[in-house]
Length: 464
Image 1 (cartoon, rainbow, N blue to C red):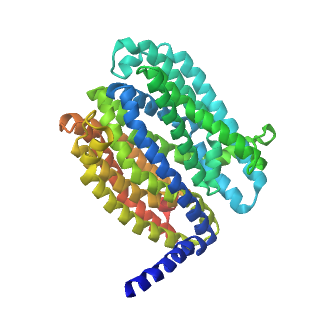
Image 2 (image 1 turned 45 degrees about the vertical axis):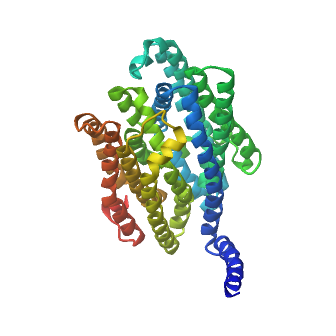
Image 3 (image 1 turned 180 degrees about the horizontal axis):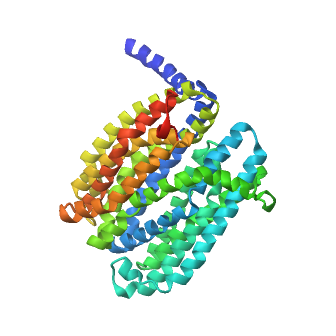
């Protein structure tokens, strides 16, 4: 009887705790909790679809074909640096304009950013179309010469869709800057669902074809972004609809003053995170990209969840820092560190069960070395911890110290990857170990800068 009474009490208390979590706290925190919770639901479904998509893609193609497509897409992402940090600078400036209540200024930022990115990426696409006819993708991707024509066509689709999506995704940046990151995750979920459906159709109607598979992966983001742009600029963000009348390049200067700082970080990010596939392709062949990608997708699950939780923080910090609400910032960071500790325990568990998970997930099609899983798990633990403080620092715009650290890691990452992989005989595991080493360096100075800024005693490079 006593047990039943306690159980009844628990049933009453638990809903109150849950409701209290979403009803109590600072309005800024409540907004973040709401969108982070919705985003987690979307991301859970997204992860599930992603897990289903990998074995289907491997079945339709093969480990080598899947690796080739993944390398091409990662190479197209290298050219994200062409925006010269405009998207990140725009995010901060748009959030500041909203914090000021100056919607006209926000509209200038939107229209000017659309115009700038359109000129940059359409120009790049035209240049790429010309250059592509002279490129031998079979040599670049270290694969069979028989695929030369097919890969040349696929490259046009991959790089073309990348350029268009980079312009169209400004609407997603607006949503994130307005502290509505859950919509961004919903966009990814819809993309994943369409890809899964399309791959199933390919399996039942055609035999394995890299070009058809790559085209599906290329055009899906464009279709989804066009829908989101039309929907939001017709409804909630109608007042920010891009207009030629609001293109003013004096606003571009304001965006780029901050954006150029992020530009260095973007280049470093490309070198640190997006060169691995091509290094592996050149050293070991495209088929070895597949186990690397599979391990990455597995350990990206906790990273993705944590990024969703963090996603409102950047723009929220911009608002809080502008309003000098340091108490809220300190409280939020402490809570995130506690959450990181729990997440790290989960990642260690993921490493222990990884061989069994891989077997259930993809069977014996691809072998994933345990060392690769260990290094990927370690990388995610370090990356999630860094992201807490980086989100804060990015929100304040004081990123000069990050720039210097990024330049150093950018210089050493590729040589270290080759050295660990080839000369220490660690294979593909050595490539991620180099990234672990580079990321661990920021553990030294990023938390220190946070403490200096939040305690308002940052000077010199710590405050730039």
